[in-house]
Length: 106
Image 1: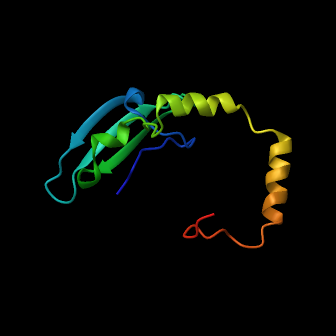
Image 2 (image 1 turned 60 degrees about the horizontal axis):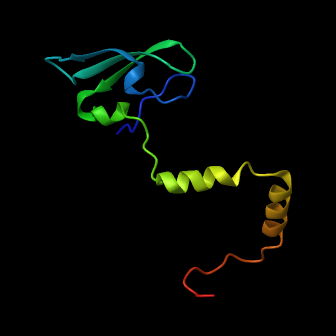
Image 3 (image 1 turned 90 degrees about the horizontal axis):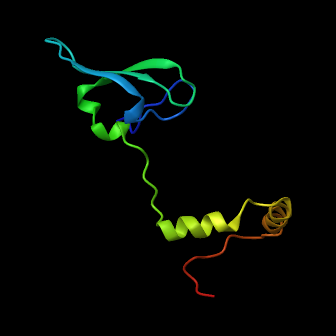
């Protein structure tokens, strides 16, 4: 089952991108939902045919962040990852002999 619709550029298609949505019922074989869209990122038009059994309005919903506003502000305050931080992380991984056991307490 599909979880989202994507443009050929790889971006997710959301409700605001949809220009036309129609239901095509067939007497023989599966019925389809037709979606015509214009990608908000690359501006190219496109279309999708989705089987009725796989169709859900949730396919066109934006992804909702699982973190709270406070967590998002704290994350934004950290700033971008610096080259020094990347180097130290790389060296820490290289010096790691085994993975820590999450069942043992420190």
